[in-house]
Length: 227
Ligand code: DX5
Ligand code: ZN
Image 1 (cartoon, rainbow, N blue to C red):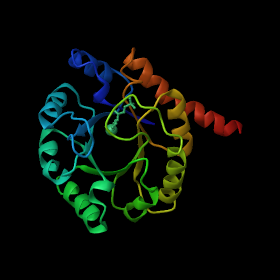
Image 2 (image 1 turned 90 degrees about the vertical axis):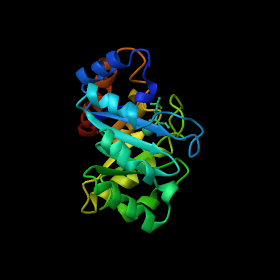
Image 3 (image 1 turned 30 degrees about the vertical axis):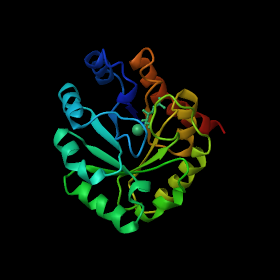
């Protein structure tokens, strides 16, 4: 299980210290939520901030673009240190545009992700299973951290897991929004590979919170054997 702590929930007066705690934890990725105030009502960060994080950490930089014009920001985020760039299906929508974006992101030598919001039918991802490297299931409406997990996300994860396993695809399933110990465990049971977590990880002891999410999958595997 890959854990991707979301920078959105950091204490910005202690960014360096908290990044070092993430580095020392079992987290393999860092999730970087980019919001433009148009696609989502909130504003967050641009590439310059990612460049700063890149200097502080060797972890995989997992960039989630919640913006109306993602094509404008691919190159700047790659140059700032992104390893994975995820765009929203709802922004591109058209098959040709979704495919072109995948090729465009890959042309910079980084991995490409495709996200869907809670109200989007997960079947919209089916055409891209062999092309994108990661599919991000949003378990809350994008825009803010700290929202409650939507249980309807679980069937989307299950379906996506089934389709990926029946296709010649190595794509990862990532889940984002409302991930805590219980919801993370449910997502892991349904087949998620990556847990993005903001408020749960940055609440208190970062290392312990990450460890608990890593171990939720171990317990899940034990549960599976027992059942
Ligand atoms: C929401 C963001 C999430 C957010 C998750 O738009 O995409 O990554 O930071 O925060 P929590 O884990 O607090 O729900
Ligand atoms: Zn996110």
